Image (tube, rainbow, N blue to C red):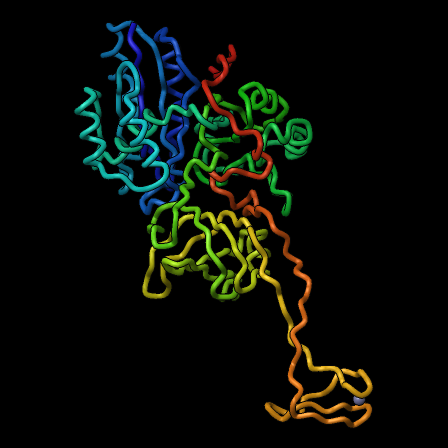
Length: 442
Ligand SMILES: [Zn+2]
């Protein structure tokens, strides 16, 4: 028997397809060939800030054990399936598949982490493939080889979650998704917080159904295979479900977030976590976005809360100079209109600066608040007529409405990788539990 890790990526386009659907097809085919699965299919989200991603930047890995004489047939079947279901006519869709045998080398694991948290080059992927005698097939530019190898290397031994994804029949793809909305609310009430991001709390919008032309009917995320399967059984679809699969993923784990020591270490296109003092007060720019800057000894950077991220915008607006914060988000590179900017996913308010407001002085004679006689002219009391050129404004410390703590963008604008509030304290580590019996259909 031989262990075989099958990674693939970059098969979809903004107009069609989904790499997870190809995984679901492969699961059925491999199952029919009689191979044993070593894990649920792994759905690994890579750096969401790379400029060339399609939608979610998700790569897939199937891990199986099979007789050595099946290897050739499996590879052929995988390559054929990827070729038939990828949107090869679309410019920018460059699929790739990688096959790695036996155990995952540490170097490949490190490569995977870097692909999730930053930018890697094709050259590095090809070097590792050669070094560890893996096989790789690329279509067109073959960029999917990078993601395929990264999915193989991300063994999800640290924090991970599960997602059950159901797929539509081809004739329904492209039309509005039909599921009973009330069943989603019931499912959420019964299974959250062990399932998460089912419904957006601020708008009431159902989040389990995507809106694109992909073949996904809905996906439910949760802490265990069992809970996502139970949740799925509570949903009433109003159209046929062609197939479903449970994936093990890095969704909702903040796996992309890498803490950097100082602002000068912040790199474009990378997701970062960095601390600093508010150095330019928040301002609202056209479109309703809020921008502020933070600084440390090494530099200053802009942070942006965008309109759809309701929660963060409200928080960002309440920041004042000298507040000490930790910000998390992807770095948008500078253009001629703006410098490098962190698109906020989270803000941790660590220390609040005292907020002071300047008031006119009180009259020393009668105690009434005085009126200014003009800039630099002193103050005059309207009640008793007392005047003084020496009195100045007095600073009064006012209460801050903002509280210290962690603020996360609203579920509707969270990235796949963003760890939501309800997952704090539920992080997993170590090998996953044994697989449940029925984790895919058909
Ligand atoms: Zn007075």
